[in-house]
Length: 102
Image 1 (tube, rainbow, N blue to C red):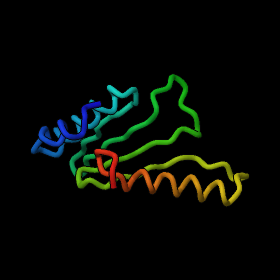
Image 2: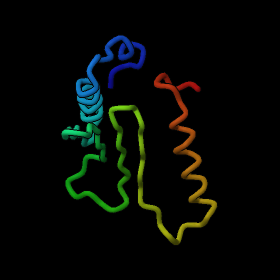
Image 3: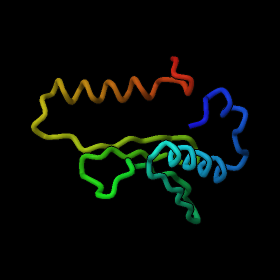
C-alpha cells in the first residue's frame, strides 16, 4: 500500500475516484475490494481474498461519507472475555490515524 504521508497529498476530489483509489490500494494489499455505485448509493466492500469465502472471514464496508463498518462472525461459544477482547482490539485499531499513531 502507499505510505500514509505520500497518500495524503493524492486525495482525489470526487468521491467515486476516492473510493476507487482505496479499492486499488486494498487490492494491491491482497484483499478483494469493489466499489458499488447506484443512483443513490456509493460504497466500498472489502473481504479477504480467498477462493472459498468462509463464514468466519471479516468484511469491511466504507461509504462515500467516510463511515466505515467492520463485521465478522463470532463463535457463540466464545467466552465473554474473548469476545470483549476482540471488540476492544478492533475499536483500538479504528482509532489509529493513517500513520499508525493516535
